[in-house]
Length: 433
Image (cartoon, rainbow, N blue to C red):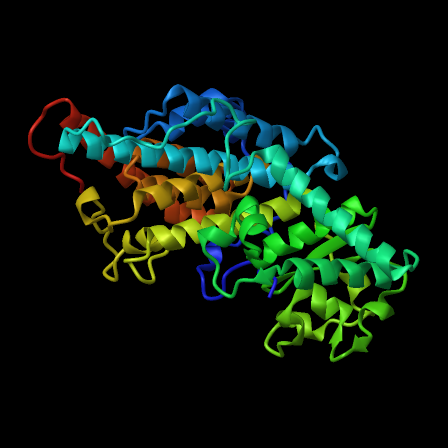
């Protein structure tokens, strides 16, 4: 199934349906000033300073990769570029490089801590023989090598077409792509989404991936064959098909399956899925996703994945759960404080924040995304950043949502003051009414 979101997950994390608006559609002059200031602050220096929060101080090589990866991601999806010029593969590999550098640094710090605890100079961390994003290995290969891997798969399809001694009819090309990807190489869709099947290089290495990543690989291979593949979100699924004036041939059943079904997986045959209702007549009426849309869907899935992992021991915890607790049944404002914060896995929470930062570059006016981003900073106990993001969100959010956020932000202001109070050596705690 080509999942655009995880079934049963909190609805507030579905950002793919968001349609960007201009700032003046809903922002006050004051909000415009805040947002302009915010946009100007999105720089590599700011990004690294965020990553360095909570005692994370990357060494020079990691810092350079973090900066370079975010810079190149931003350049790829820049609104100054035409959508057709955006490389899905490069963009996803830059995302993976940033996350890999962050996790590699954490592993190195753990190794150094272990060495210090044992006072053993023989315990060595993994040796790094790279110092920039171009040379950093991911699953044993550099970014250019993974791009070459996609080229090689496309060449295998060309060999398959040549061996059949056939022309380049649409159906024949799709059959060759399907045979190479799903039979010769053995790519498989993972029924359970985890980190190992959620990064492009990992999927190219293991041949086992999430539905959205297999769709992106399919798009990239066909692009190298000069065949345009388009896609659209249909319910909870993201479906792809070739751009054609004769969609009937995609739905012809051969050996129990249609080409449309082979390309998109079991969701097409699942009566519970909206995808099962599609016909050749309904395809032209679907909204075609742009490359930026596809990257947005991927990043939203990545946020869901890391948030789910971060909150694993807190079953059912949603990002917005604290907002509902601020006002109790008696109409009185309840207390929120850091001591009642649920225990979350810090690395996964940080990875979720990093994915959210990238998605905000794509969708800076998406109030629901910015709210959830602010709530992740709240769970990280960084009340200053939480206040900043939630305050910006209030300028964009519908009035009823802003009314829910306002008292919560006021409480966060007090928690921020209390944290500052304690950091200066004062005893006791400030009273939160």
